[in-house]
Length: 417
Ligand SMILES: Cc1cc2nc3c(=O)[nH]c(=O)nc-3n(C[C@H](O)[C@H](O)[C@H](O)COP(=O)(O)OP(=O)(O)OC[C@H]3O[C@@H](n4cnc5c(N)ncnc54)[C@H](O)[C@@H]3O)c2cc1C
Image (cartoon, rainbow, N blue to C red; front, top):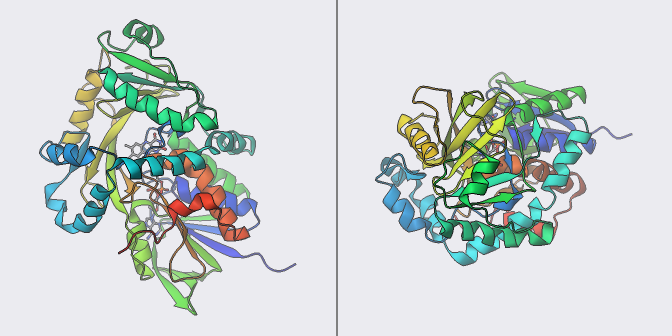
């Protein structure tokens, strides 16, 4: 039997781990490298929603004007730090160019098509023995104004071919009957029954345990510092203490993917879209299902023993500096929807960086210029949702060489810079 091909996966976030799992299932000899701990990046303190229903990309019609207005408000749902603008001006220009209806609809259709496999793949993952905290209680979207609700219902139309129903609007009394913690002055809501959620830390831990049981080594605390290249290929990945010869490499380094690809001489248009969360013991706020506090853009997830409030998007470059004003914005926003918001000093505060591209769609495919290097990143607000399907399509591409038409909107070289 020929020796198994050896694949290095760079990044032990949910995307790298999901890809490692799918590659291992197809017989690859996989080794994973992470500069920090397993699942210590954006895959840690997020809301854990599995939401094909929300497949729309971040750049959307009307966002340009809102984001310019919000630049003056550090607690707003989307904040572009003015001092960071010069360093990301080209990226921002492309991002703003994609804030139109045609690109938004195209992006939504492409992501929705991939996400059609998402819910069955999560069930399959659990059946394969990957153990994680998994809840099937739907997603309750709550609105202070009816106009926003119509936009969310519109997005669900794209999901109808994949078995999603358009839910009937719920009035304020019905919302309080479902979740007594909700305020009684909300305008309306939608219960999307199909969506699910996980505790994200348990998902990365579950993947890591399952990979270890399959003989995959995960090198935590071992950053990739370079690549040994030759004949148009990557021959080895380099670390501070040496390197490892490999047959192929997958860059899944989240918001750091641009700097990792830069080590191979390739520019990737990935920026960090920072988000924040606060996790409190569930005794403080009792909820039965995830809530989307729509106008405030806050995600709220009940886990076993805890409730997490997550949200805000901050474009301020690749850094994990925690801006407390944004956490204040989350606490204030929660108070507009729940009878009691977490008090100013309650809970564990967290900041993470979503990897974001200018059109809001992931980069999935070969790294230009190197025949055995691949990229899976840029999942923005949907990395947990799309992890299993990303793993599957990348493994099919890397092992089987198949690149279905459905992957063409995600080509790595689609931006012209
Ligand atoms: C507040 C918030 C809420 C969110 N809620 C949701 C949600 O409800 N549902 C959803 O689907 N998504 C959600 N997301 C988005 C989701 O968290 C991300 O899309 C996802 O975690 C990205 O995963 P990743 O593996 O690409 O990146 P990461 O998890 O950031 O992993 C990248 C890894 O690469 C490693 N790395 C970097 N450089 C190197 C190097 N040189 N060498 C080795 N390793 C390296 C890092 O240490 C890191 O561990 C949320 C994000 C935030 C911030």
